[in-house]
Image (tube, rainbow, N blue to C red; front, top):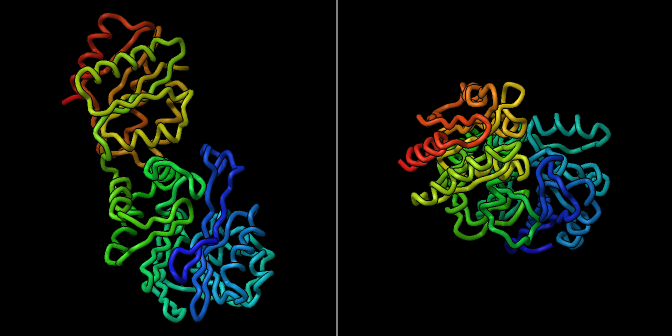
Length: 385
């Protein structure tokens, strides 16, 4: 437990045992499941935590309440890493009023059919409740990134409780760059819902915010425009950093050689940033993150079973699922007898918005030839324009 403001306490927990978040995202520094309590004339708890930490969380809550009972439990987000202890909470504090929206209570019934809630308060978008000095306004944020999501603004302390928005991978207190793990988190989990995030940002633009309290990661207290600007860039699918990301797959090393040759040419020509990843060996979520970070992408892959190598196929699919757009893409394709990878890649992006294809395509037939080296030189020149 720790103080966020004079009346607001952090009562969340760290999970240092987890290896994969949501069963797919590598989290070497663990995860934080954040929860908060506001102590006023009436007390309000915001969200619970993952099922494995119910006792620790309840102990944190009791310490913060210092002998008092909670008047409200506000459910902002029903994903089980935040809602799993609703039943345990209600068993301890059965008279507490649970606050949610219509979709919240539908999901509670679906997830926890045995949990009884005697007192419910169903709120609508923009409605408020008073705890005394603290006035809490509920801001609906559907599909950021679940349909029931709502957020809470405390006008007294100017704290924005943002549900999963502005969250990141990593346990609380981890020494690491916020943007790196927040970007990976955003594009991995929220990235598809840029339109909805833009709508949320417009809703909160008039609020005076001094702290952002997410359900994952650090409490943001300084230079908030930096975080808000990044979220605006990410959710509008704009380019965050000038540079080129080269993503490749290679069976016998020839496609890798071509990708590395392109990297070297770009560096020689003064490209501000060149990132390169082997999709078979590096974290796929980090590769997705880099594809959205930079304005130009080169996909280098072998033809496989007449189509695209599996790791490249997965990568391209993940980009498309997250509405990849407003980018320039180049292709390096390889094949011994029938080079068709480029055709299939372009087909997969057929419905994507604002994709510009480089005029230069590098087509390798087995090993990199002198002709291919000239094509790579031309591709590098085109990428530098």
